[in-house]
Amino acid sequence: MDASSLSHGVSCAPYLALKHVAGSDQPVLYSFSEKKVDDIVDEENLSTYCTCLLSDYPADDAGKTTSSSSCLVLLVETDAPVIWYCLIGDKEWLRHEYDIGTLEYDGHSEKLVISPIVACRGKFYFNGSSFKEVGVLQFRPAPAFSSIIICNAITGPKGCRKVFVVESMQELYMISLMSAYLDLDVVHRCSVHKMDFVKDEWLQVDDIGDRVFLLSSWYFGASRSADECGLERNCIYMVYPWNKRVMIFNIGGQATKVMDLDGAPASDQALWMLPTHP
Image (cartoon, rainbow, N blue to C red; front, side, top):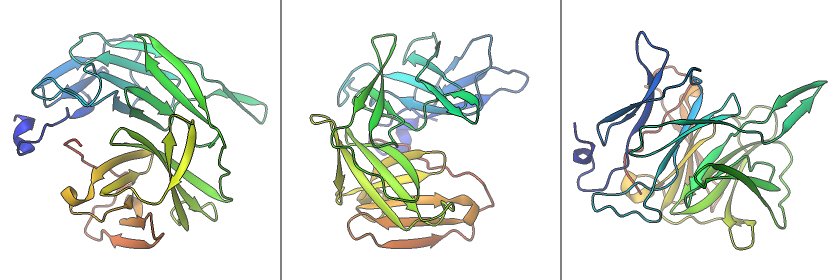
């Protein structure tokens, strides 16, 4: 099936999925829109827990993008300090082990890993939940790590907080869901901040226009047009599969609604299918 036939004339981004083929420990990357399968070849197996990202909007049929014409696929192992990357159209996957610091606790130490992470303007931004610093990964062409020190760093509210970073229309957003106690399923407040790349500052916003943010556990976040999807504008949709419900937060009014998913199958994971861009 040609993926472009599903988008009714709208340019369609590649569908990316990882799958372990029966009888083999090597994962393969499927690009349904281009009908290509590229093996990730390495002595070591790729972790089951990965985040898969495109560095930029891929080229459309006319070879145009909103920014860079080159697009890179990045796989981030969320349980180890390892990334894999490959330029679209290239056959070679490269593995890179990074070092962004160490966490010390109770006499033990553990390497910090990248999570959450998002692509924006051809770069990758990660681990910004401290409000004071945001990690930056770009390829020149080798991986190069740096950071943005946040000016006028905001003070996070008291309580437990789950943070998501989302790219929307080439802008970088940070969404915080705050809970009074350890139960992160009970959210009493949400906030949205937009990165000012000129001032290196997070600015709080209460209006994202026609957009909606779609979130799920394990730090997944995406942005879509509310009108195109039939959703409520200027809202955050957070899915809780184990409770079979979706929480809808209005960013401007701070109102909250609950959408029950009584007919949904029991699951401890959630998945948004977002086939087209923007």
